[in-house]
Length: 325
Image 1 (cartoon, rainbow, N blue to C red):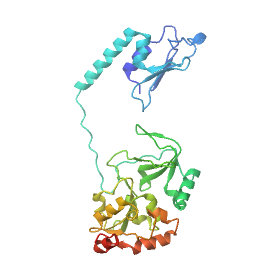
Image 2 (tube, rainbow, N blue to C red):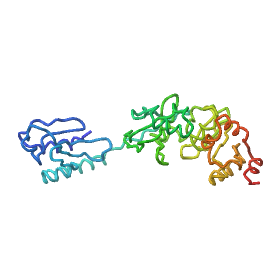
Image 3 (cartoon, helix red, strand yellow):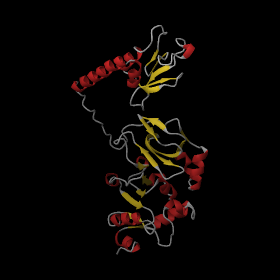
Image 4 (cartoon, one colour):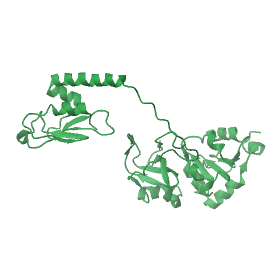
């Protein structure tokens, strides 16, 4: 919304004889005093002062002469004395605001076992569209298309421009309501995770949809988890980060299913830290692939599931497989 001070000083630049300005909360317009709008001066109102949520300053633009600037620069050009007055008044307002008692920051109430706050699914998020289906088909995950969205443009959400054009959207859901999401670019390996409030959830996919009293398999990615052939209420995945220890402790039977440690050095290091404390899915040296999603190019999901369940190890047995004994 345009402030009262900006509104006042912009309107004071309107020339006498012009018809009344059109005034809206976010847009004020009248005839341009710079170009006089040629022979149409006084008839057409093409000079606008406007604001948008993503703008740090109000802008002035003439749709006749294409003049474009911030309000202070516009005032300086049209009337230097008016600009000085505007500058002093905004300074005084700023000083007054500093003297005003500040409101205490409202405490966020955390509700155990569920996110704190939800967002409406943006209109640009589409399901069953060609780019989404083609992408999932290449990953051998087409049957899970109902779990994902596609965005064909960047969006503006909660005072932020989110760079998610041409991305697969992995929603974070609780009771069929979205509290955040991760966007994964289709043409490049780039991710953007959006949580409007750090207390509204965690960077863990499917966490609120699992049965914590049953074995829960923890994967490195959503696509690996869905490639496992395991039921949805038994799988979770980190979104660009390790699953927090606090959440792992809430699980009765956590089982880590990371990338192939014989192909991924970081995965091997993680397994070394985990195998004494938790059960892990250990790969065989004969599999020349990096992750579970790649396994879908060789096996169907039922066979992958059998392989996972057969290779759950812990402690000394796990160390022997990893050559760490």
